[in-house]
Length: 327
Ligand code: KG4
Ligand code: ZN
Image 1 (cartoon, protein in one colour):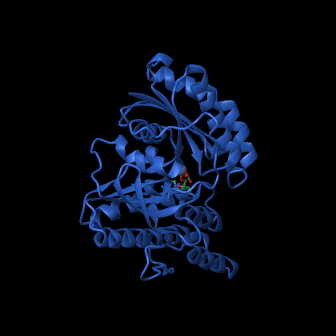
Image 2: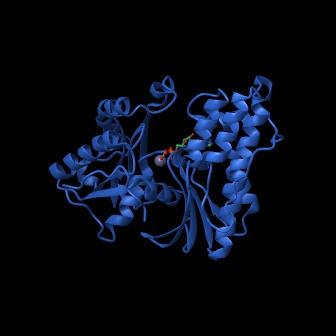
Image 3: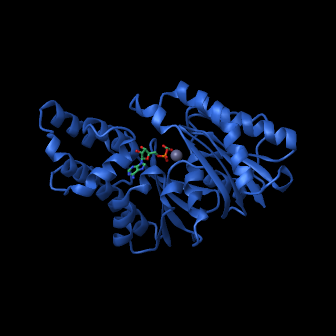
């Protein structure tokens, strides 16, 4: 069964064809990162206009790369939330139009659920029950998954998401946008020798990352951030965030006796996080290839497949939901 996936929730226009939820036949991503970099973050109106320009060529390329015609496609999966309303509308309207004209099932997908399904695109298939850490620009969630579509939210961030913290910290350090990859790179030449606050919030599976950002802001205002120390500061920040993410994930994995840990979302492209969770975990850890950690449409197609085979499809009048929750 071949699904065309479409993703446009933020600043990546993406389309992909995936077979049986696991085999990637094509994956095309048009990134707007350079356009938004000059503003230091995603500008919603600019993002939607850019999606309008890119969406058709990106879908055409995904179909060509997969050597697929419309007669080969069994369903259209599209992200309907969470995300920027204007951006989501471009992908959703395009998907509805194709599904309507070609008479194909439409599958509206939650972006966070799609991030989890990036783990079905690798060689080793995930085994339930599993614990998934979703760490993206807008979310830091710990989710217990007992089967397809079966989610229990164990913890989430009480303020900033991990990716948001990376982006804000990078801005304070003058490392530019997007902050996650910039801090990951700057850390290569630094040591985690600067003492920064680790926010454990004992007794819960929740996270909090606004304290460390405020701490850096205060350091900056007090003139305590020197150019020569940036690599060490980046390494120390990354170490503090990764420490908490790994510590809390492993604690929850033990508490709920899961068989595997899955990582997903843009921050799981972080090299220190990937290394450290594998070193510390008592159960196998699955992490998508970096390109499938950040926004892409192959994960949307995979998620759509598992919806379709269990009859979970959408009507053509489905709306986008910018604040859509996983559970
Ligand atoms: O999942 P994603 O592509 O988009 C959302 O759904 O939000 O995640 C984007 C986030 C950004 O905050 C970005 O800075 C962060 O993921 N990110 C990273 C890395 N690559 C992307 N954070 C840390 N290290 C990285 N290598
Ligand atoms: Zn995302």
